[in-house]
Image (cartoon, rainbow, N blue to C red):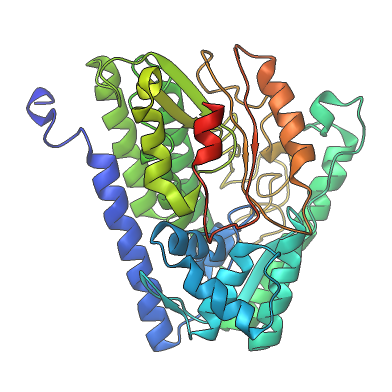
Length: 420
């Protein structure tokens, strides 16, 4: 029965279904904009999607909305709108694309972005906090900023606290109290009461999605690799963000793992004959997204490069959640004292302990692309530490290129040609 599905029902299903699900998700945002439904503006790092879904809040990702304008070659229009409004040319292009979108009443190449009812931010990036202030001024909405505890000591393993440490428990309680505050704010905004049973159901979908994604990453260690992380992987991560905690999302990743299992067993890869692997630390150059991928297929011996993106941690998304609290701990069926925050949302545990641990051990090149043209952000420091950890694995060469200040507006392929 399985053999009858090869090449027709399984191979390529992830890319096709992922594109469809992402378009359907954006169509729901368009409907929300037209009907004035509650929407939360969130970021990829620390979206708190599970909590927000309990209150039937749509989630809109300004980062994803902005990068889509670059992929579709219209970012310059939104950037110009924001700059004409008064924003400086040298600040984050993602912010300005979003501001241009807001000034155009949510107009977007994929539909219409609804106005926010609430915004959830984290301190993962300084720009997030300033970005949230823009929405406060535009819409007079509440914003909630998570203060995620940082590293405490260089002598701790990988500069982070671990479960069982006293510091970790204090950090966990600190974040738990913030989760409770967010729940109260969502109740105030939507007029709905928190339902812990629904949260448990949502967390179950997140866990299943995470397990499947972990398996997908493991299977991409096959030779040839069954998927290309820059082209197909971008689709997978889009679904992971948009449909996190939903039955559609967990079903999609379950089917995706089945596809990768099939391709791995039958030796079906992105390239018929894989010669090199390239690990790309960061994200693609969205203004030349397709062209950037083609570069590695056109330049002589580089035509067999496989592009992979560092993502995830020990449990797929770097996080495993427990819908039920352990025996003897607070947080029963009628309480959210412990269950929604089990050191699993935005704690340091979320970071991989060894970067690239679950990714293929054979590498040929490492080109970090520092994409953020933030003037509030120092991109070099984190990339340098990350590159050092990766070099302790089986890396052969490393090439580097700083992101261009043009951000989403343009990207020149010539520096990459020279480096390659």
